[in-house]
Amino acid sequence: PSRSLQQSPVDDTSRKALSEIAFAFDIDGVLYQGSRAIPGAKEMLRKIRSHDIRYVFLTNGGGSHEDAKFKSLSKRLGLSEDEDVIRNRVILSHTPMRGWDESVKKQGTVLITGSHPEIARRVANEYGFARAVTPADIIEANDKVYPFDNLRESLHRDKDVPANQLKIDQILVWNDPRDWSLDIQVIHDLLISHRGYLGTISDKNGNAQLPNNGWQQDGQPQLWISNLDLLWKTEYPVNRFGTGAFVEALKGVWAASTGGAELQFSALGKPSRHTYEYAHDRLLHHAPEEPHGKGEEKKPLRRVYMIGDNPESDIRGANEFAPADGTEWVSILVKTGVWKETAAEREPRYKPTVIVDDVVEAIAWAMRNEG
Ligand code: G3P
Ligand code: MG
Image (tube, rainbow, N blue to C red; front, side, top):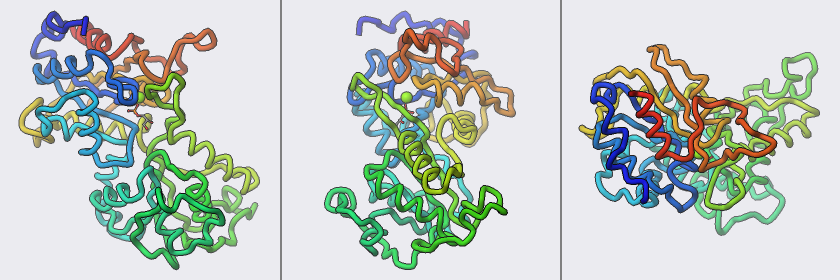
């Protein structure tokens, strides 16, 4: 690339200052756009690593294993070497569920929706969820659940658990579903059920004497959505709809079918505090470059730079996050992703500390900021 990093400001910043800072890199729209790497990203990353600066990749992408995401990141950026060093730094939208209470994960059944059901189920099992079912399992057990032809051969080929008499305890929406229609139907059915038994209907629904008019008041499964991004950036010139668009569709159908009730759910992923806490903890425990992965010792931080392209998730989350240890999270917005300055929107709704062209400029700015 034309912008060589030989004279990078990274080199001018004192080692002590560098040992107290960290970077959180968003992936889509910051390190690459679809299959296209952002020029200079790879070299900048190398530079950061050679200076033992701590970093994580904090993405709202999901539906796969962290290692698989690392592999695709590494392929797109051409980072073939030192895989183990980078691997444990990938935090997906649902990665914080790894830290959920083990005993809760061992009880009951979760419904997982995501782009590739069989992968999602395997990852859920690896996270410790003892029993995970997908919409494919449900339709296999009773094809009356969905009265239309579905994507049986392509999407719903892999099935596992016979889902008759199914009781679901939690619903985890992990990432962009491919079959919105089936997923909305099944999630709706569970949210109107009696205690999560699929195919039942709660007699509390619509009861004006109860909170929320009785909706979601009868032991229905808790709904977790781990990515609220309405938009994300690929190589296509127009931003693409993300999992957040699915959530808007689900909210709309829920409001229409309940006479205006608001969908109750919990969120994970950026901008949720839980996700930033998880990333912060990961950064505190990371040995700079060796040994691989999580260090045992906690090393304090002074400042973390979140480099993102989406004001609603990356920037908002970093701005609102104030960890108890007093570390400052600084938000840097790049122009290679979701956000573009337009005549109508000169400034993003959630204002970053600074707006720069791309990830290379972002790191240069951070280094100047460190003096
Ligand atoms: O599905 C991925 C997308 O919503 C955002 O990914 O890396 O920009 O947080 P990222
Ligand atoms: Mg992004």
